[in-house]
Amino acid sequence: MNKLLLFVLMSLNLSMMSQTPIRYVALGDSYTICTGATEAQSWPVLLSKHLKENKVNIELIANPSQNGWTSQNLIDRELPIFDKSKATFVTLLIGVNDWVQGVDAKTFSKNLIKIIDHIQAQLPDKSKLILITIPDFGVTSTGARYSGGRDISKGIAEFNKIILDEAKKRNLKTVDVFEKSKEMGKDSTLVAPDGLHPSAKEYAIWETLIYPVAFQLLK
Image 1 (tube, rainbow, N blue to C red):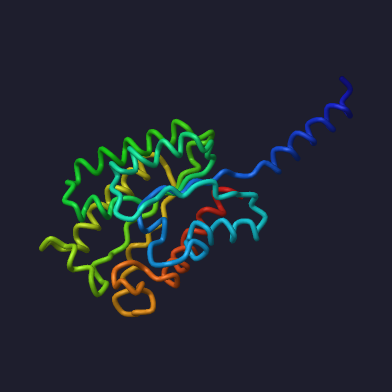
Image 2: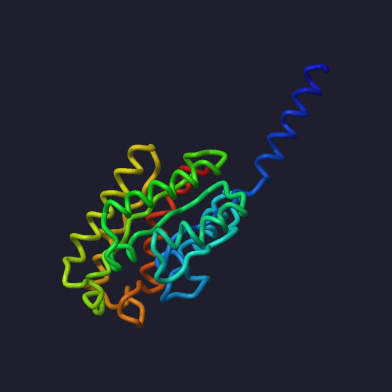
């Protein structure tokens, strides 16, 4: 095969590869399905749109997240959907319901490791996974109802340390929304009508934090 023909074939292959959409799956709970906002206002949809606008060929294939789900629910109900998705990029935001339901830190850590191991085993590129920290729901008007008499900020911070430490061990990208979420306690427009979940405005703010990390990872 002459060099010119080889060059043309390689160029065509590269062009075809660049046209293959990144298959995005968002895994999590109410904070990923975005309870309190419409589907169009959810940060995974906004993220996909923002990336497309900046020449990243991406499609949101699935968002099986559900309100109230724990890390164990994710293992049981979301990972089977992920397995069928042929995903090439994943975001993961899980843990708030573990804490609310009294799951101890050791069990949460074990489940988190199992989830990440499973995702990375399936991804063609193990680095294409972003871990997102749990927001501080304790600053909302109804958050205290779910504390069980515990310090919400302290408890969520403990779980977030588990998330960040695990990401560091694996050299995975992270987005920390914990501190930013505290603004929900000062601005009622950042909270949904249920007084607990973020509003569409707050989810949009999260997207501005997630976008630059995703763009650098996927561009």
